[in-house]
Amino acid sequence: MASSRRRFLTSAVAMGGAAVLGGQATAWNRRAGTPAAPADSISPSELLARHETHHAPAARAAAPAAAGQDPRMPSAAEVRSWYTDRRNWGRWGDDDQKGAVNLITPEKTAAAAALVRNGRRVSMSRVFQPPQQFLRKSDRPGGSGAVVDYYGFIYHGQTITHIDALCHMWDVDGMWQGRDPDVELTTQGAAFGAIDAWSDGIITRGVLIDVPRHRGESHVTPGNPVQGWELEEAAEAQGVAVGPGDALLVYSGRERFLAAGGQYGGGDRPGLGVTCAKFIRDHDVSLLGWDMMDARPDPYGLAFPVHGVLFNYGVALLDNALLEPLADACAEEGRYEFLFLGLPLKVARGTGSPVNPLAVF
View 1 (cartoon, helix red, strand yellow):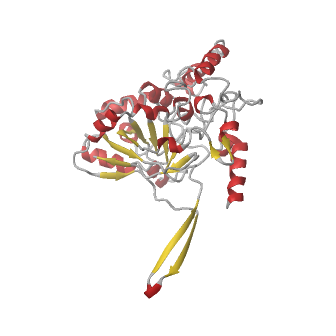
View 2: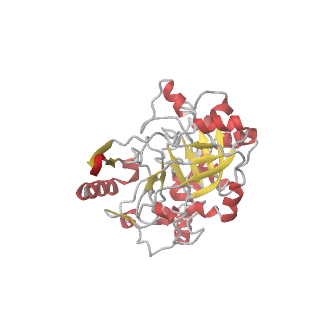
């Protein structure tokens, strides 16, 4: 087990986030050929200032032709600025490892708890079926017995409902706070931005945006990704506002897409477009939960169009959430806000954790 774990971690760190998740490296997200500066040699705020100076004369590239068909689509330079000029690095201190979860104050959690009226609970977790499961039964005196089991799985990907830790991804400037993944990630796990930074839980106000209902369709389709302005419009239509520290759940209809014969995996797929990142930053969201993740291909050539909110803004990501039951519950309850509970396992040096998030009405 130990040797297998070491082999896996060594290969994962060597490949980098884009390779592990099947993304393509671009001039924006590719790791530089030379190692980044040591973690203690430059602060996040200094790195941001240096980056702004470095890229001030950057090309004023227009949006790709396909994206430019909609006048609301930003230019490539604007997209770049969202993930460079508006980073949250240093916002809560240069050594902070909680990111936007800092926005969930005790007062925020108490206000969220007041949203519970009838106690209806809805799970947002998919059924967990580990690829490896071994059982061992043992006999006990008097005809009694017991059973234990072993689970073997990699929870990152497109199958298991899980929360990404802030160390999970990075770009050419580094992971969260500008830290160097070659320094912070070793065969022993993550030394910075690990999942146990959120060991007290992510308990806040949850807001669901039902995109298919807003569009009048059964599900989001390939080639028509969810856009940030749609989230604004849908929230207004639902009579709900997204505020600082909220957990934003974006329902896109993944189950219905699959039932209609669609395929959802690491290749081209429907999902959220990069303009949703601006919405997330504008509203100071603490967590993004989604059933469909980054839409692919991205017209700007980004490996992490929306996953970039993780290491740039410090926003926790709830991947592969099962949101259809929650969308149904919201429609039945006549409201799209609720108490959200996301309780990752307290895994030392972990890059994330499986989770069974709950909504309570």
